[in-house]
Image (cartoon, rainbow, N blue to C red; front, side):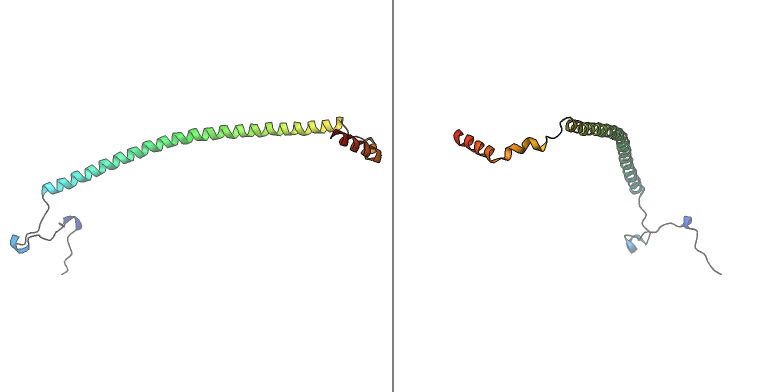
Length: 134
């Protein structure tokens, strides 16, 4: 005949007795006050955790709202940046076009215009003028 242990729900936890033989070997069970104190302590811990969860949920909502505002601002800045790039491109293109137009309207002088500047007579006249200025 085999004996099976009783189901888990029927077992009573047994703690070692504190007094041993002096109490007659009776097992020590926590008092009702001790159990109530433990329950109250656990309830207080749960209330503290609920408060923390509530604070975290509020912070999460605040961060989500801030995130949406920042995303909107980033989109605005991206649009402004695109607009500024287009404007800068137009300005640069205008500058290039203006420089090209100026170059076309003022052609470089003909090399013959400077031909007389390198003659020995011109150099002597310039040196005399510089010497007289001293």
